[in-house]
Length: 303
Picture: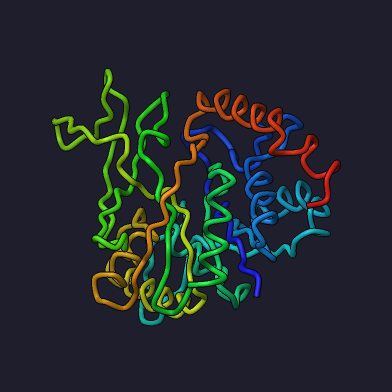
């Protein structure tokens, strides 16, 4: 059974200043998502599901309908901002979604096979999709998940601070937990994060999560229970978000699952800030010029 690619695309891109997931950054105005889907098809994924807000549906379908549907099955799932939980009658109105783990849960009716999760606005590298596809086909199980680990130095923006989940691993490269580091940035020749008023350095080779996870489809049952518990504990906070690392850490800590960390030396590219855009454009142009991608991406080659 071919694995599925789940693309999280419900964010508003507030720091970027618009729907960055639909911004054309490729040589022929392709989005980052298109390069991700291209790489996934080559790696053997059989379906792609976009998690979006209902208000994005028209824009997404105008952009992607008929673009690559002859090469991969396409589905859509909607992440709701306001949810209903039994026994809670006074949930406050929200202006932003409930986080990445809730976004994954939104796709539970679309997926019945092992699947990978990515961000819509991140370029992960060709190698990462093959590594993940091999894991999902050969190893994914109800008690074994995975994530791709990136070297921190290859994920830091030159135009502002970022947050990263630092991977803590045992001797067999299984994740023991993720520690969120806030305000990571370049400072002279170092990479540092903020701890109150202090700057603490991190090695450029530190493995971090870029939200590229591999799951067995049985995780949806765990997500349903976990999200309901999270809402009950946080429903008075309209900014609370249920992130993938929260459920991952919980399942690892209680011994329910193991999560293999799959390292890659690939360079990550993303558009956290508008100032990041020229770097991404130049990188995709170079990869295309080197022959890794056709141009236009979908019109000149059948994968």
